[in-house]
Image (cartoon, rainbow, N blue to C red; front, top):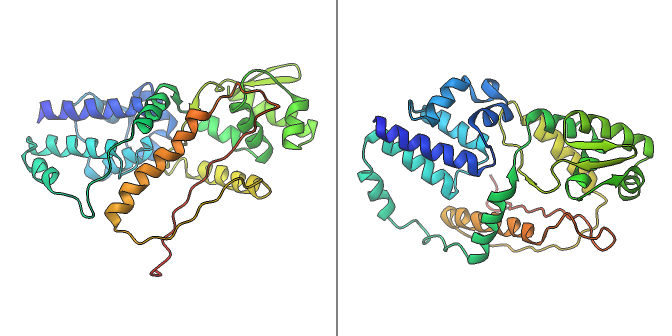
Length: 287
């Protein structure tokens, strides 16, 4: 099992890096440490080094903390490596792999999807839970951080006020905790994001991060109530669970495609900051 456990550890380490966590320790701290994952850092470190395997239910928690969707190729690769380590062979996995999934196989990744995935993997970063707590402190702080994240270079307090309609006093107050958390840099009446060239990944859901994610969601919902709706598409369909999972993968890639058009250095007079928001509802039959 030792060699297979090492293969699992290698797969886990690879996915962790692809998810924007440069080190095992930074990942562990960013998602809330032992309070969220339920074990000490040395235990996680032993997993990546191939010295031990997690319990199956802990593997699910680890993937959630990494922000890996259970229906994604990364999740399947990690689970495959896990069960291979347990059994010492991939013979039974080959049997499963040869079975055609219900509803047909998932469409191949399009060239544009592959290109965007590569771009995102080069610029993905994760903020610490403390940094997320700082930007989620209140609505003004949250919105100012969003504006600065998506705007390259120095931004004056006046420009922030004009864009957000907040008062100068509120903006100046919001910038202080952002600077203390090393999210922005201040110089007189100007501020700039320390993440302006990066794509900040969403905070993974763990027990420790749940309150922060709730606050972020509430701030965004409040902010978009009066936002200008640019586009809406709706389509009602009947599909199998297998086809839904396949479609979800492509929908996620389609949303990520927006990053190919993103440039924080755009002329501020000719550009705006947009939120791409998607949702899938199961409407019938009622649960």
